[in-house]
Length: 313
Length: 246
Image (cartoon, rainbow over all chains, first blue to last red; front, top):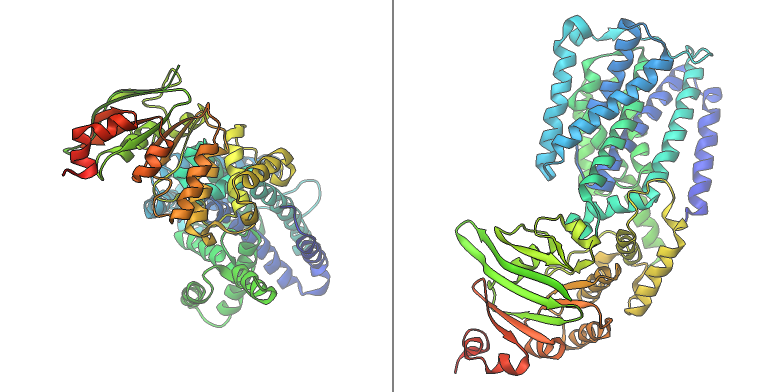
């Protein structure tokens, strides 16, 4: 099905709003909006696995954090420029994704979830435990913003840089899920045995989906290291993976742009709630329960169901 | 020429022999029906031929290739298609998208991650032709989960046919269907090109005798009788285990 005119128009409106945003809000919110874009990308990368391929991973932060740490280590310990560090971080996240995929794709369902969780904990424990290299749980402060010939030190320039990266990545992801490859992923989600009987090499599709998801998660992680100028084991933690899962489910798994909305909402709420109480995770848990009870297909699912009911069968 | 050659095939599940040395040869263009009571090993034989389970011993040849240990998707690319006894479709996709996947699986280029699906005009044309041909055109935009059971069984068949297979395995295509729906499926099978080889599990005797060139009867993991309608009807062992003894 060709993209509908309403969808294209909505994307254009959102893009214009995102472009003028730094002119209308305070600098603090420019930083927050940057964080929203980064996590939107992170959640969309996970949706490729959860919503399209039907693989629930509880280790997606491993790739996010691996890329962030690669940036920090290369620039702080290795002294290389961002021309090298940025692409290398993506390569490292992608290769890590390939290794995890080879191990995790031997299992399905909750076993897949447990293996991805365990492997991500291994990565986390390296960052946490290897103090001489990573400073352990103190993290690594002072990661410089990338310098591609113009300064990204201010909130607004870095916001535009992130927006540009996000837009390109979102377009790529949208192209991937609209392609025969993306259709095949949905087929695999619904029935692996049927896809095999139709001649599809299911493992190869799942592997490529996993590696692609890891690469896009790495891209988000690299941006996050630059945004904070800081990396810590929290970037790799299972809570980060679980939060991404909730972003996807809240927005609507298998809708690509739903998880982006879910991510923006969660980032905003976390910021808002954290200014009042320390119990953000409790609020997050409550949100998760409410969504599974009342909007199992996410916010996007809620809207489309409503529209369908209004327009009749 | 031999389409399918099954040679002394066995499969043990724990201590149970689901298949105990089955040998079977089906010529190109033949329509063969497998009969047998529940637990006779018919579906296990189908799974072994289509690659869902690996046999414990024995060999399977498909148009001269040894496929005994080949992955299921590779067998599909050699021209083997199957339907499932328990409906196995894409519940959350539309009928059209399901058929597009079936057409694309046969098309055979790998992955194709960047060009949008809607630009593959030829696949859409093929999918629409198939839906038109098999009476599902009106359901194209519907979600598979919302189809009636009869429509889902028809779609099972259409998905298997999309790749223009040389050997088609049908696992109880009429199970659970009303007489009218059964007649429709029988008519669908009769309309298939004569050069397509068909191996079919069927419990309905009338359907079996109507569609089959030859019939093979299985019992307790073995093939106990093979022949045309008259021979099978006359065979005392078959009457005893399957048609009911007097």
